[in-house]
Length: 216
Image (cartoon, rainbow, N blue to C red):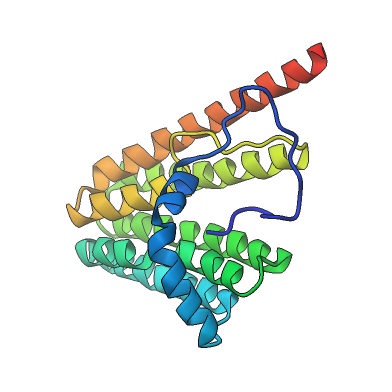
């Protein structure tokens, strides 16, 4: 997960603005495990964009498993495929730094992966006649895109906006863990509600930063 326009834009430091989310926290603590693997892949000539695409293909395959009703298997595979989100960025750094297109591709395929996973779960609910759960997953899909959009729009204004209870890392973990237990109803509610809360958190954060700017 190389992030949105990582390294391509300087963001204004805001007083009291959070500087990291769970993804950054976990990446910092896994760097000792990721770097040796990334350096090996770099020496073998593996391109970071290749890892990004492979990760996306795997998650689309998992979405198909969800739609077919293999929820536990999909959840287990999602936990295994998750590290690729961080490994592509580590390989990019090992090969001389992240490129703007690589960050763009990573963010774009992340959005498509999110859509595939949630739509796969929604398709399963449709097949089972669970109309409420299907509607909740569709609401969660809108929420997931809004979580991403609010960050991107804030960053276009020079505001760091990584706050929120359900960033992509948490979303993937919630989907994977609850899928392992076939708790799809709980998963539907969790994604829909927590995505909406995250959007609200980001809106309030940007409002606060803008209000501070106006008082200067």
